[in-house]
Length: 164
Image (cartoon, rainbow, N blue to C red; front, side):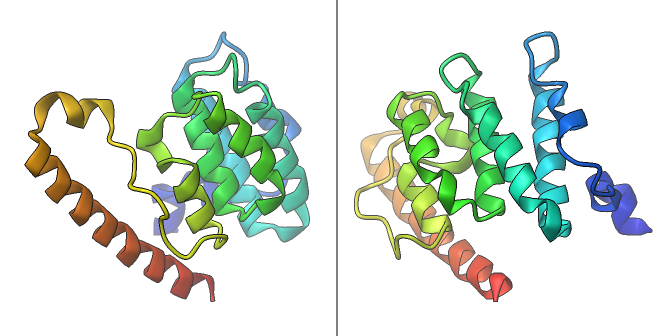
């Protein structure tokens, strides 16, 4: 019961994705759309028979990446990654290539590939975020990026252990 209060989506029955797609228009605030996308992800994770429908519903949201807020695109991509939706990688790549994904949510396309198990480690340095660039010296930025890489590698190892 405690988990259900903390994570309300953990108790959602697999009603299908259609009702959760209603908030995906500009009339609803971004966080309502993100919450609906998270619910789709949780339903797909907890009810394997609905995974494909939930992945398709999330992908249908991402198909509008050009006109959707970058933060929402980032969260939708993170939820597709949680569902291990490797089949949606070309669509995800298009959103990143169009510069329509907030890198603060999930990282860049290389981070997505690492999370999906398609790359073992980064091949390029991670892109610095605009916020960090404004306030941090170059030496400190290098130090932060090294620490970030180290922390990300630790998280990846923990996630891969959980996936097994």
